[in-house]
Each structure stands twice: as C-alpha cells, then as structure tokens.
Image (cartoon, rainbow, N blue to C red):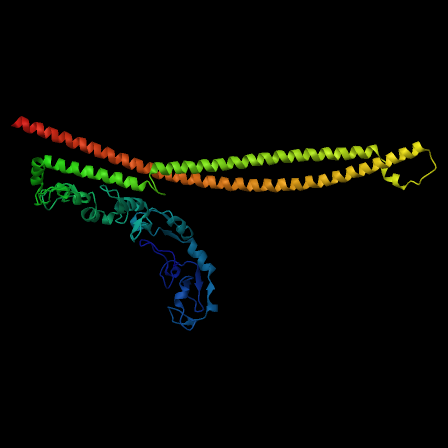
Length: 433
C-alpha cells in the first residue's frame, strides 16, 4: 500500500513525504544514497538488471543498501494531521498512527457499491441509500409480472417484454390488453378481435358454411344456425360415445377377453396360490407331528434298554462260567439265565437297529421340513408378485373407468344442454309465428 493520504487542506514538511507516491511516509526505508521512500514503493524503483535507481539523484543502489528508518517512522507516526476526507466535511484530527483506524469508520470515506457491475464510489454515509434507491444495478421486481431484474432494464422490460404490460390491439384498436393475452385476443377460433376473420367453428363436424366472417358475422351465423349446429353436435357426440365404448372394450383385454374376464382370471390365480400355500402349511404341520412322535418313540426305547440292563447287570459274564458239579436245579437255572442273557442281547441289537431307523427318519423329516420352508418362501414371493401386478392393473382399470365416467358425464350434460337449447328455440319460433 502507498503512503498515508494527505488531506488537501493539510500541510506537512516535505521530508515526511515519500519521494515516489508523494504521500506521508508509511513504513519508511532509507536507500544507500540517503533518500527515504515507503517500503511499498521500493519495488517500483527496480530495474531489469536487479538493481534499484533513486528518483532524486538517479544513483543506483542494491537491495542490501535498503534499511528501515525507525527514527523517521516514529516522527511520522507522531505527526498531527486532519482526515483526508476533511474537504467532504469530516472534522477528525489526530496523529498519523490513528488515521487508518479512523478511516475504517469515517462516514465521509468513499466505498465501492457492492451491487453487481456497479463501479461507483459513494460516501459510507450515503452507501445504503445508493444501493437500495439510486443504483441502476439494484435488484427490483416488476410491479406487473413479478419478475426480478436490475433497475436499469426494468422500464425496457415493461415496454418490450413484460407479459402483463397493457398494449393496444393493432387490428381492432382495443386498449388495455395484457401483452401475454394478445394471442388469445386475436385467435381466429376463440378470440374476440373484430378485425380477425374466421370460419364457422362447427365446420369440422359438418357445417356447410365455409365463408370467412368477422366476429359480428360469426355471432349472427351462430344464432341463425343454432338448430343445425345442435344436430351436428349431437351426431358427433353419439359417434364419439360409440368410439369410446369400442376402445374401452379393446383396452380392457390385456391377456384376451374383457376386463371382467381378466378380473375373474386374476381372482382364480390368487385363489390357486392361496390353496397351494395352505397345502404346504398342512404338510409342514403333519411333518412336525411325525417328528414329535418319532422323538417320543426314541425316548421310550432308550428307557426299555436301560431297564433291561438294570435287571441283568452280570449277564455279560455268564458265558464265561465253567461247568461245575452241581445239581439239576442249579443247572436248569443257569440255562435259563443264559437264555435270558441271549434274549437281552437280542433286544439290545433290535433297539439299536430301531434307533438307527429313527435317526434316518428324523433326518428325512428335517430335509422335508427344509424343502417345505423353501416352498413356502417361494410361494410367498409369488403371492407378493401377484398382488403387486393385481394392484397395478386395478389402478389402470380405475383410471379407465373414471375416464369413461367423465366422458359419459360430459356427453350427457352436452346432450341435455343442446336439447334444451333446441327445445327453447323451437318454442321461441312458434311463439314468434
């Protein structure tokens, strides 16, 4: 930054002024030749070869010959000066060391307008008024259409572009028509401009009058041909009704047949899916019951084996006994004991075989249960898909039914209205005659 700005009304000894910017020295430095500059002005003295040149005696000096002049700095900061904005009315007066702080709040200090594209410098005290009321680049809203734009183009916008700006019709001379409604005003079918010629609106459904007419002529033709127009309109409506019924009949058959048939097919599909799910659930219940029965059977067999072992704890040693000279009674008892041991061994083997069979059956039941669970999940996913498709098609059917009802309602109201008009005109003609 250059030196401190000197007030136009103030005077300072020239030795306190920078030899380049002519302002009061700011962070003064002294060159090898003894002259003093602002530190920010030194780079402007540099030449292409890297040396510096003094503006006073044109003597060159190197960068290492530049020194901070603290003595000069203390003297400068102690100088008493007036505000640089004193010509504009600021009354501040004080030492140079406080001038920057004062300028940051001085009401007479000029600042650049913050509105886009505005380059004007305005007093700080007047800046808000300028930005909000005077600046040509301030944002304003069109009072007619509500669009936002800069104040500089607002008037041009209203005269040339604004859709709500009132203008005059070049054809009939009518005034006060919003620019955006001019196309509707001069529309050859629905407009009300007297200068625009048009044909009869009922020509498309059979009116034989193909002559171009002005607005007043069209009204007269409509009055004279009202009965004819009503008959043509009724015929057109009946034909449209037949077309709607035909399209509805064709549109309701996504997979062949009418919409009612499709609904019956969808309901049958859902019923079959529900029946399949119920069957799988019943099978799963039966499998679970069978598993529980087998488990109880296994527990019972284990109890029987344990009981037999308790009754014959030494049966395993009977076969190793040596024959001794004992009585027939003892021999008979020993024979019975050996036979009992054989029976127990047979029961144990049979129990083991049955246990293996039960284990295999339990494994099979578990596999069947897993298969049943997988089947249920697949059926649930299929059920969700069917419900989703049914919901989508119900929405389509509802839209079609609503559309048909609206068409029928419009046709009915139009037919009744036309018949009432025809009847009224017939009665009027009879009364006149």
